[in-house]
Image: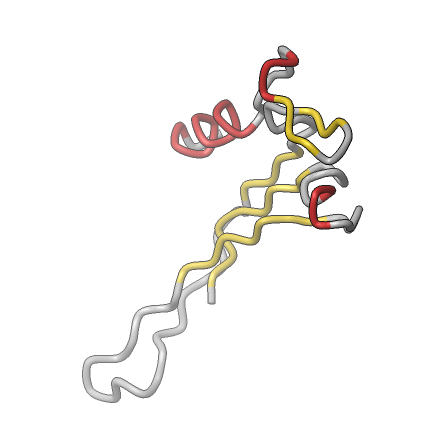
Length: 87
């Protein structure tokens, strides 16, 4: 697989599930298959990898409830926009 992007998420992403585990999104692209031998993949070079850190996801967790009205920004929208622009 070709690694296209890695986005690090804040440690409280899954806080409602009772965990503070560090999580990242790993975006992979399957290598194309050979036309003559579909079970084999073509050797395709690894390109630059987009990397970003999301510090906030648009909500706070208070008393085991997600509070979207807290005025916290969502870093994922600008991260997706930067990826699409090729930054």
